[in-house]
Length: 109
Image (cartoon, rainbow, N blue to C red; front, side):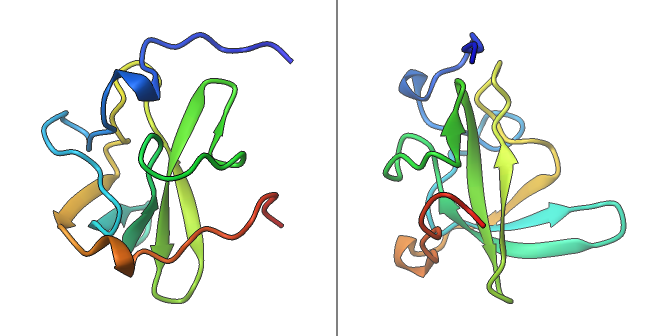
């Protein structure tokens, strides 16, 4: 499998929210804006901060993990050119890193 070459690497600095001002940290309270609804969640995986996870980092692409109150979670791609999250992830407030539910073991099923 070929490796994708990107402008941003996790060693270049922290992942930031869209706009580039605020760093993404474990435990952050966020809102994801979808087509029909908004969902509130907690950041539970950040590339470069969390231990490497094969489902969230591969082929030079990285995802942040967000867990929701119902127990489900999603991964949101980090823009490989800027190191920022997509516009649909909105930072609400800082939370405690201990509040972040750990990711399930890999591979996801």
